[in-house]
Amino acid sequence: MAQADQTVQNDTFPTVRADINNNLAALFSNNSGATEPGSGPSAPPAVAYMDWIDTRSTNPGGYPVWRKRNATNNAWITLGTIIGNTLAFEGTLPSQSGNSGKYLTTNGTVASWGTIPPGSSKEVFTTSGTWTKPSAGTIALITIWGGGGGGGRDQGDSGGGGGGGGCVQALYQLSDLPGSAAVTIGAGGTGQADKGAGGVGGTSSFGSLLSAYGGGGGQGSSTSNTGGGGGGGSLSAGSTPPEGLGGGAGGIGHGSVLDGGNGGSTFIAPGRGNWGGGGGGGAAGNRTGAGAYYGGGGGGGCDNATQRAGGTSLLGGNGAASNTGTAGSVPGGGGGGSEEAAVAGGNGGAGLCIVYIW
Image (cartoon, rainbow, N blue to C red; front, side, top):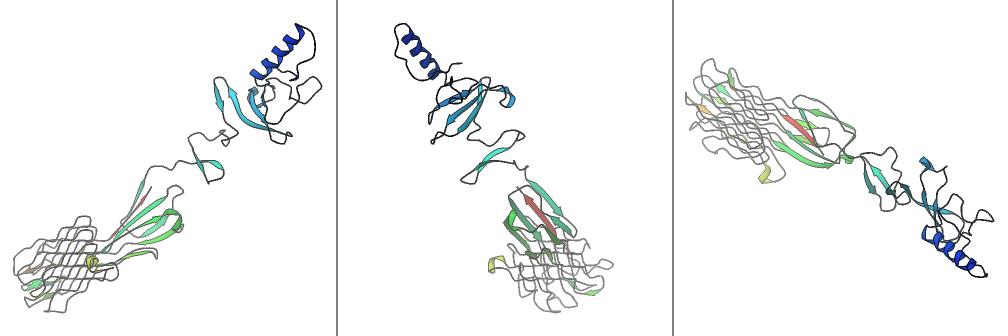
């Protein structure tokens, strides 16, 4: 430690040399000492921009503190604390006390410590419930599927497959979402146990932000022209065709590429959905259900005892085969049609909602 008055006295050798050395020692040690420069008659004067290593035992932890005089020479700016062989730059960083494991961030003016968010989370709703916004995270990806349509049935004649449920996906800033949202999961349409059309798949929704509509029910009829249900879309459900006529229309989407596929029949081949569900297979020609990329696949259709497969989907559920009475896969697969004795049309697969946070 060394402090000096920063003035070389006019005296004789060797006094002048000793005074020069004292001032150089103070300069080299940044005026280190327990006395604030300028605070007493024996202390060196304080000068704007000068450094001072404050060695007072009253410092936090008793550690030396590096201080610099401000431009107007009326206060000290704390630059950092010297702890052993390290220097904590407290003059440029916010306090490190109690902030272990946090990261440094800034609003463009002031630096602060931020909490590191946990890894990505995934919440799956297979039944209706309430989503609650987590305290950590930045981005939310929400994907929902509507329920698949039920398969139609007419014992000994024909049954069209149910259409697949539509799929809707959206990306949000987590801060833009409400604190909670009601999640509704659409049920799969009921397969026909007697004679007639299967039920339309239910609509799934995430609050008022997103809705994914269900697939249309397949028709059951004594005519071989029985059509499959249309695939669900993002703005409307797939339709069930009139008895004896063509396949059901695909649900409306945000553009033709997003529409659910049309149900198959004698006149309309099964369509293929993109975000919308695949159409159910029609009876004539024993058509397979239409596939889909994101929506559910359509159920297979049948005339007489021939069994046809359901359509497959990349991310949604697959449609069920005809004449099996099995349900379409979750999410949103269409039920297969039936004409077999004691075998009802298959139920549609229920909808689903998945929320990813990261």
